[in-house]
Length: 385
Ligand SMILES: *Cc1c(COP(=O)(O)O)cnc(C)c1O
Image (cartoon, protein in one colour):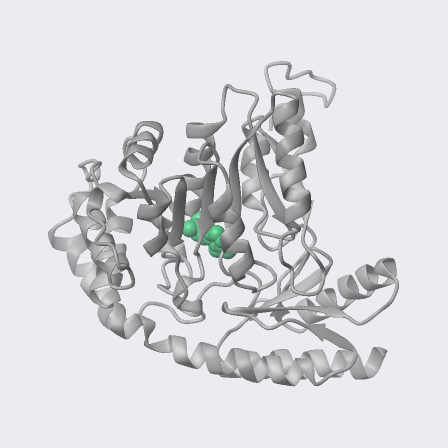
């Protein structure tokens, strides 16, 4: 360790970064027991099956040359993704509509660079929502305008959104990008018909990013709307239903003019050969890998019925692989404190869940993990309320 005093001024570092925290998915103060149910990051509870791992291992032994840079064009992967996307699209997308990234996080950053960096433009999000849009915008010095969702169904307060867009425009910081999640995280709700109409009504000089990270769970997609709305972009990921969070592969479906801009911005070899191979293996075996979706939906519905029958909880229906809930307490402050305590206790018992946006998000795991979630939660509520 170099012996710099804390007074050493690292004047070359942007001062606004002092306000930000490095991302930590499990929170700051959590010491995890060795055996835990990881229900705080919405991954699949199932690893790749043995046969696919062997297929991948064989490719590593025979095809992948570790001394060579990866395929920087991603052509094979983009073709396979386009085919998969087209299974649920009325418009046949070719690979020029696809761009792949090191997780969809990289694509979010590339979209921000392509639209806002070096200008006064801002982005708009409606919270609670996925935190990375705002975090990545801040790291790039881009203003993120946040408007609330209404508290019953977590729909976007469209009047406030329109007002914020007009105001930002009036002071020369026009909104260039709106990020929405379909279904939203952490709240699990799909975009409503009225919200989709609103997105369609937005001026074409605003990019509308629709994040479909949970598409496989919801079976709902807006891809068929893309040809009509060239100012829309859809994000998807292999990190959730496809069980490849370790490999960091996401993709964007958008008009070729936008994907070409993303191609200019990304690092030349953004996706390691092994990750490209993993995504291809996952797509080739998609029927098998996605065969667990029915179980996840059943388990989600079971957990929802269990939780929503408890008057000490406020629980929302979900179209994704997680459930959002709050303790039924009148005071916001007490709610926050009690929820913190609850989440901490669950962690100590080996059930990791996420405390976010003054609520608790619980991923759907295996049936036995979900049973433990139920019993840990019920025991805590009986003891404390
Ligand atoms: C999990 C998740 C992602 C996935 O990000 P990756 O970088 O692809 O792992 C993207 N968007 C949302 C809303 C998510 O919940």
